[in-house]
Amino acid sequence: MLGSEIMGYYRRGGERDRLAAGQGRLEFLRTWDVLCRVLSGAPAAVLDVGGATGVYAGPLAQAGYQVRVVDPVPEHVADAAVLPGVSAVIGDARALPAEDGSVDAVLLLGPLYHLSDRADRVTAWREAARVVRAGGVVVGATISRFASLFDGFVKDYFSDARFRPLAERALADGVHRNVDAERSWFTSAYFHHPDELAGEVAEAGLIVRRRVAVEGPLWMTGQRLTEILASPDLTGLLLEMMRSVEDEPSLLGASSHILTIAVRRIEGVGGMEG
Ligand SMILES: C[S@@+](CC[C@H](N)C(=O)[O-])C[C@H]1O[C@@H](n2cnc3c(N)ncnc32)[C@H](O)[C@@H]1O
Image (cartoon, rainbow, N blue to C red; front, side, top):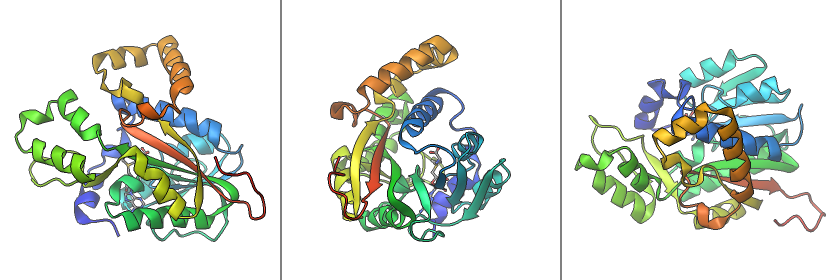
């Protein structure tokens, strides 16, 4: 299932509060804002694949959705399973424990950037296509090919000489591999070029409707981002303004995360292509 290095990284518990402040908080607020607009209304059934500790599953359940988390990390599943209204099970995006056409929506907010083989990513999308009902939506999160380069400067990773070869490898082919056990920059991952997404999704038989820039370049604004997020007015303004540019293709590569919104075709109905 999950490689031991990735499993070890997540077993350290970082997902419990990763989205609580700063860049993570921006990622959460923007992703939530998009989900609220693309999911069909509650009480739709949502399969949250790679849902970790239930950071989205919890609020979705509170909003009336029927949510099931699937995640390979036992500690994540244990945390998610105790959230009110959330069920959780150990599993892998490439072999989902769900019946064909049994859910209204599938979230893939995590697995796609941990599958470095294209065939595995297409399999994850194909599994989502299998379990979602006709006309249902699949939302996949990916990390931009350029995020590691930018983060290297924002967080001063380049001051460690071991970081540059990792960043260069990721720029060359998208594959990020920690080479040094003592120093962890995230964990093994795949960073997508925005132009790769449509092909992977289409190969899995889904129809791509939108590619959304989650943060744009605002995730790199450091202390200013913290100040903005401390102000409800500024946060509201940020969300409103980002909504107006989120479909702009030229912002995708500068964003840390990209959401791809796809739907399963309704047989016999034309005009679904987005
Ligand atoms: C960075 S966390 C994201 C968690 C949460 N969905 C979010 O968006 O904040 C990535 C998650 O993907 C999960 N994951 C990694 N590989 C996976 C796979 N092959 N199948 C399902 N989940 C996977 C990890 O266990 C982890 O919970």
